[in-house]
Structures are given as structure tokens and as C-alpha cells.
Image (cartoon, rainbow over the protein chains, first blue to last red):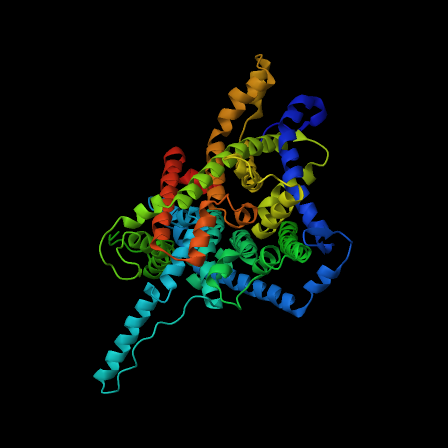
Amino acid sequence: MSGALQDWKSQKKPFAAVVTAPVFWLALFFVAPMAIVWLYSFGQNAGPADIEISGTLDNYKRATEWLYVSIFLKSFAVATLTTLLCLIIGFPVAMAITFAAPKWRPWLLLGIMLPFWTNLLIRTYALMALMGTNGYMNKGLGELWEGASWLRTLVGMQPLDAWTPVQLLYNNFAVVLGLVYVHLPFMVLPLYSALDRLDKSLIEASLDLGAGHFKTFMQIVVPLAAPGIVAGVMITLIPALGAYLTPDLMGGTDSQMIANVIERQFKRANDWPFGAALSFLLIYAMFILIAFQSMRANKVKAA
Amino acid sequence: MFNRTPIAPLEYTRKLWMRSWVGLTMLFLYAPLILLMIFSFNDSKRNVVWKGFTLKYYEKALHNDSLVEALVNSLTIAALATIVSLVIGALAAVALWRFRFPFKGLVEGTMSLPIIVPEICLGVAFLIFFAKVDWPTDLPWPLNLSAITIAHITFCFPFVAMVVRARLASFNKEEEEAAKDLGASEWQAFRDVLLPHIRPALVAGALLAFTLSLDDFVITFFTSGPDTITFPVKVYSMVRFSVTPEVNAASTILILLTVILTFIALKLQGVKGIAETH
């Protein structure tokens, strides 16, 4: 870094040239739409295509009904479980990339990034095709079943009944699996960038001084990689909480998440003010999560 | 791979369990996509049994006018959104990097919001906004894509700004001052000194914006009218209502497109360069 920031007054023309377009765009196409949603959340349907902004809090009151609170809680639970699974699966992968031979590292990274760049819908669809009643997962399970049946006949027992395909899709299990599948690269990349920066001699020192691999991992690697873990958790948890596509396509009737409820208010139930209130509650939830994270980051800095 | 030197303590990657873990994760990530691609050539409606090689679903997909139209729409939107996001994002990055001005924190914070706000909320906001301002929906192509394009620019340009700003941090301001001392105008200094420095970030930002736009389903789902279908929205309705092998073929085309784009990025930047932009 060199040179201090310039005061805008000393260079009005260049300042205006660079600042106008972004600020104009943000105000018109981001702040204005969000503001309208916010206002709508205090309104009510006044006619078939007319919404009166009356300052009512009814929409928020309705959002505290158990039905909606339970969907919020469930979305949190699903997103947390997804994040936890991504962390458990992703951490060893990030470790492996960090300690891989330099020749291999870029290719492993690319291997993680390519799915990240592939269309989300196509990835979800591919997973659905695999998990369908005619899909490979069912075929594999069927073969295991037949194998077990054959083993039973070997020991003189009755063979098992014929395999009937199980429904792997359209339930909560499918939603969590789908979310893990989609968000895994989100977790691995920040973990890798934290681990890559870590001073490897500290791990060597710990191992030399007699700590086992597990102890070294828990007491050296995890604390030093904490910023990456927090970043990975946030970057996975936030989109997972607002996920629409995966629960919509892979979930059953009871696996609706908050985004699906919001969508329904706009596309089917036609209750825009209530949908607007739910949207803002979801946004506030994100803000709280981010506030927790930055409070934690500040504490670490202060300590 | 099979050398017999003992495994050093930090060579975690050479341990068997670590290798199998990575292998299984890669299998998890890639098996669905690879099977989808293989079975797009399968001569059978029921996906799981191989009945022989065929290109008929590609033929069908390419003769499906609404699917092709959706793909053309998606590519057009992505191209337009990329160009505008690149300009606005780069300007925003330069403004925040170079100037001190009132409400800077507010502008900076607001600009990071489109990245944080859940897609569904942004989609809803655009739905309401375009309904409220009576955005015309019966314009001729490509103007009928304007609403979707505007929405895409809003969530793409903050990413471009982020990438460009990271690159600007390594710029030596003395170079620009030297150029000005030697008589370059403000614009010449920008064009001949600053712009070449941020070029790699612009390439990375463009690729990021293009993929983000091409990938987006949720926001487009809320902003698209009946006549402005994009590729993800079209695939969604095909998956939702009638799963056909055509979807496999169309998806394979898009996956290949992604792979090609990634390799172009690789050629331009090297693997490391791409890794750093994420």
C-alpha cells in the first residue's frame, strides 16, 4: 500500500466520474426495491392488485404463529446440519489439498472448484437422477439386498423377499444430502485458504514434542484455522438457510424451508405483504448471524 | 505415486485414509454429473440401463425451439450483465480504493448487501419493484430481457468490485503520479497505468459475473415473464413437470460450456490465479 486516500473535494471531477454510476445503480436497483418490500411488509391486501401500506403489524404477528416459527426453526436445523456435515467432510479434504505435493495441489483445487462453477440446477437434477427409484443408488442397494439374500441361502435360511426400490427422494434426508452436495465446495475453499496460510512448522514442532496427530489437530490446527472455519461456516450456513431450489425439488411436503414459504406467498397464495414480512425476517436472521460473527472476530482481535 | 520413501509426518496426502476420503468426496461430487453426461447418450427412456449409443436426445434438444431460445436468452443476459457489471464494479472499486468521501461506510456496506441478502429476498424485491414501476413486458428481443439483466447486474457487480479492489491493493500509486507528472491527463493515467494493472482482476471478475448470471435460477424465476424464459428456468420446468432425456442432453451441453470457460480461465490466469479469486 502506498499513498493515503484522496479527499473527494480535491478531485471533484474524477470522483464524480467513478462514483456516480455505482451509487446510482445501487440506489435505484437495490435500495429502492428493498425499501418497497420493507414498506409492503407493513401493508395489507386492499384489492386484487392493490396493496395498501397501512402501517399494520399483522404480517409480523402472523409470522409468529407456530406454523411459521416451526418452519423457521426447521430451516435453521437443516442449514446447521448441512453446515456441520460440510465441515466434517470438507476439513480432511482441505487438509489433503494443503499438504498435497505442489504438482497435485492446483488440480485438486480445480476438482473442488469445477462443481462450484457448474449450474446449481443441473447439479441438483443430476443428484436427483441418481437417487430416483430407477436411479443408481437404488440399483446399488438392490444388489446389496440380493447379495444378503444369497448369503442367507448359503447358510440354509429362507431368501429375502424380492427387492422393492425405496423412495430416497422427496424427504428430509434428500434435502440435507442435496444441500451438502451443493454447498461442499463453499466450505472447502475458505478452509483451504486458511490452512494454506498456517505455519506448518508449528505442526511439526507439536509432533516432535510428542503430541499425537489427533492432539496436534485439535490443539494446533483447529485453533489456527479458526478464521477459515468461521468463514466456511458462514458462507455455507447463509445460503443453506435461504435455500429454495433443493427443498423445492428434492423435498417432500414436510420438508418446506422458509424460502419455499416465501415463494408460495408470491406465486400462489398471492399474499405479498405477508411474503414481504417473511423476507425481511429472513434478512434480519442473516444480519444477526453476521453480527455474531463480527463480534467474535472483534473479540479475537482484542485478545 | 508408488515410491517407497517413508511417509513424512506432514505428508497427510500420502496416507491411505486421507486419500480414500478425498477420493470418495470427489466421487460424491462428480459421479452424479458424469453419470448424467454418459446417460445423455443412452438410447433408453428409463435412465439406468445402457441400451446403446445415440445422439437423438441432442437432436431433440437442439430442435426444441423453446429450449434453444432459453439458452440464447441466458447467454445474452449473461453477456450483457457481465459487460455492465464489469464497468460499474470497476468504477466502484476505484472509488472506494482511491477516495475519502462522506457516507463512504454506508456505500461500502450497502454494496456488500446484494452478496449477503438471500437470493429469494432479492428475487421477491425485483418482482415487486418491476410490478410497481410497471416495467414494460412486451418489448421486442433483446429489450424484453432488460428486467432480468438489471437484476443480474445488481448481484454481479459487487463481486466484480470485490475482485478488482483486492487487485488494486497491490497497485503502486507512485506509478500513476509519475504518469501525471509527465503530463498524462487523469483519463490517460487511468487508461494507460491503472487499467493494465487491474486487467487480471477484470478477467477474473468477468468470468465470475458470467457464471453467476448463467447459473442464477431463483432471482430469474421471480423476474422472468411468460415470454422471457432462461435456460435454468426452462430446465426447472422440464424437471418439475416432465423429466425427459432431453434435459440430460441440454445439461451436458451446459456442463461442457462451463468446463470450456474454466479452461479458458486457466489458460489466461493459471490455476493459482483462479484459486485466489475465490
